[in-house]
Image (cartoon, rainbow, N blue to C red; front, side, top):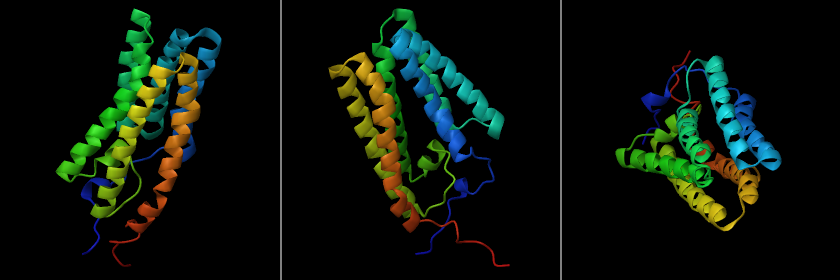
Length: 200
């Protein structure tokens, strides 16, 4: 069966350089961790909200569009962060990762049912895979997000606030990176970036 690129993935959109994307993703979490250690969870939440907005603005300035995952995360941070500060209840900011993970798992699940490569949209992907490759990769990420949602719930409900904050930076982020790296063999196997090009 011939391998084909999905039309939705064949575009010339600009993408953030890997190091810039890493800095914009992790920078707000680093600030959240540092401020929490000095001034507590409510000050950390406020700084985190500001940092997320700044990261969104910088991202737009660099590529002239808003990555879907970044926008969704920012909206949820603003809502749950605002509730945390307004009600002085850190339960909301602790639930925020669970909501995000569950939302992305649900979106990917819907994509699987519709046979659409929504993973490429969620991650602003720069790679091209066959339909089978997208299906397998999407399934893995959907299950990973379900796992991370459950793990966040266990951590924040059973551990201290400081432990949970540390887990976000030193637990959830490394787990995500390791999982992403483990997907490389599958992505390489189903990669089509060198195919379907017109001969010169």
